[in-house]
Image (cartoon, rainbow, N blue to C red; front, side):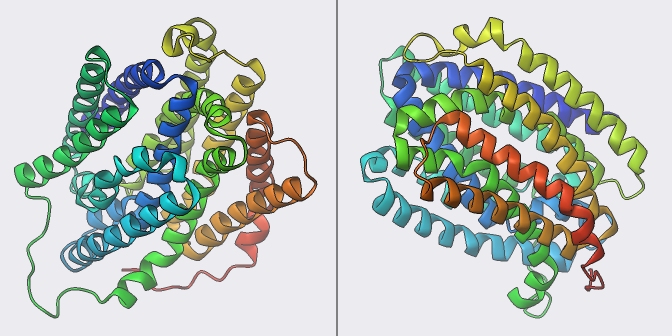
Length: 393
């Protein structure tokens, strides 16, 4: 683990601390109901931003580090920009049709979704400068924290807070691109890959990545639609602990994805270490949860907390066993495994709704855990029955 890579961990710790403070303010601005609406936006934005990204942030750094730079990166930048507008349009339609009661607030986050393609941290990591990616992330967290804090101090509402939150991210994308010249220059009409050529490499990675994050994020939109913002707010207040502390495992994966010479043993060791640290921090929620969320409808639920701790380790296992397929370019196996996990999760929700069972935050998290564990168990079958002879740049 080199010193520059440690910058990414420092950035994650800083982001986690700033994220906690931002959610501290959001909880007090909107209460549990407003916090549910905020969480709905964060879930939808992650899903649509992943569509825009098209899996590039996952395998892009490794391709850049291996020398496949000019043609591939130029194509990635071009097609991510076009996918961003599609994401923004679909997000707008879904917000209008499915969540009319939250439409005004959801529109405040639209600039962040439309501009996500301008976030090029993956290029910095691939070029051996994770410290630059870390700096941009810390700048974004600082701006969002300061902005939302000022909204709270001035007595503003959830709409103003989300506008500031969204605008802060967009500004940092533009600053980083201008300061470090991350966007490659066009080198000629025939040097950029067509979308079909680009997608032939990226499609399995995108499918697996998109399926994974959709599966993890879909509970909040479903809970909001079926049970209202209060129910999703209760779920999200506990799930936030997982998403914040789980980034320690995610950044471990990102570091090793950009290091072609890394070994599985090194990967596993760092993954276990940071997941254990995240577990201890999550258990400490008994002391900081009341301080974090206040008294506007929030209360620590031990069942939800323990389920999130189990999910933390299942997620780490997923990043090791499933995402490690990318190390050996087994892209089809990765894609199919991600899709199978999403399909399992969707099937469990369909069965549960058809049976007309009560939809609660605890149920939603249990369904996600069941799908993830089942998917890990069938992973060897997927690997055996998948031919991985696809072309790799």
